[in-house]
Length: 261
Image 1 (cartoon, one colour):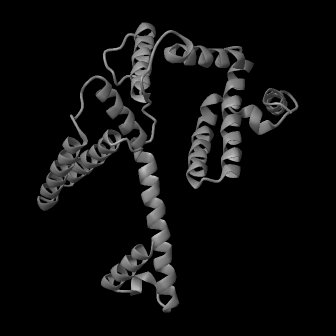
Image 2 (image 1 turned 45 degrees about the vertical axis):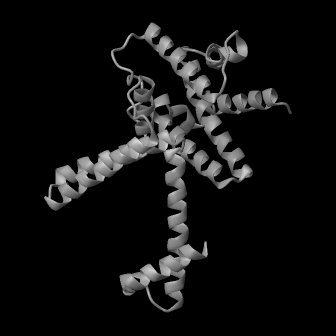
């Protein structure tokens, strides 16, 4: 079965589920109700990619694809647009935004490709919906880490950025000093504000060094979880629970686990 045939078969399954005589639950759903499932499946896909397991990635790609098709079918059934329009729209957009591939444009490297992409996207948005800010159009519902990255990228594209990563690192130190001052003053509102500034600056530091903050944080979490599970196992072997072990001893065990890696 070719990819086109497999996709058509999937459409057939979806339409049977959502048309009269199909599944009551599927027939009750709307685009709004399905967004949460699309978001959940997208994060599961991100986890699968991080795991490096091709079989898991294949499965999660299928789940995301099904949610996308489901939402599209809701609009098609309502007569708003069909999925062919979705495909045509994205195909035309990709051609417009890759003039170095489909036109006479030139791109020396990926950085130039990205600048061209942002310029063309900005021109498209301005023509369709004139807006007063470069930050318009960033979804408010994005998880904060991803939204921080998008905001930083938009501001940088407008020329509002540090000259180099060292400047961002210095700003991080400045924000840390402000956090310490707020902590010393017992300023709860100030603590929340300064922690927010620290996180946003850290995201910008990742951006300026070419690191995905999402990937970096996921890696840190995976390392912590692995080490913590090893800590629990070593403590359990002594017949104790973590809360029964002095912090200094837990720190020593932690450092041994870290060194063994």
